[in-house]
Length: 220
Image 1: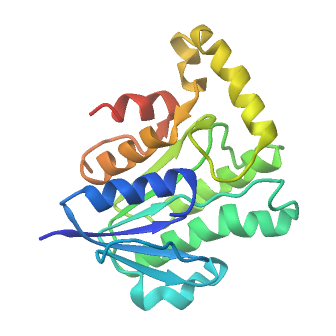
Image 2 (image 1 turned 180 degrees about the horizontal axis):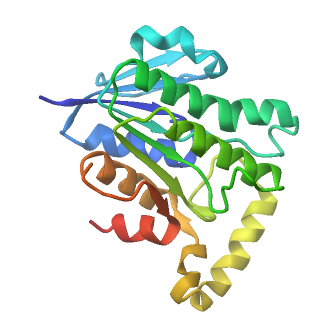
């Protein structure tokens, strides 16, 4: 029987890559997107549920699948209000994990970030760390948390400072060897490949997947 996947954040860089790969993947007969805006031109195997993801419970009856890909994230530029920022980066993934648990979904994959630590004094790292901790409290059988470093790829929005940072990082990439490999830029397409690989190879023992491991698993 073909599988059903849920994607949160399918309009973003990594989420859109996952969407395209799942559309082309014959193992999947149905893909459900939950988002604020509609994506045009998608095949019939994709169903879109449009609404406010901060009110995710409104979708509970339709939040049924074999696996969930949570690719939600914002930026300080887009969301300068810290309370709203936390509602997005922490609240949506945690609520998605809760709904997954309540609806019997046994595979949940979420993108976090390198440096995530619920005890950190840095707001971004603390938010990601708290998100990870509370997602794990839902005790979904197959939970995978991916911690990429800087994510590379062709973004739709213009992020000038991020482009500059990526440019600098690309120059110094050869210096990242040994234990520094996890700091290398990771392409969104590799993150997507790894998430799909993990969803279909749930015997993988590690829950926290670091950036260098993401790259290695993407080659399977």
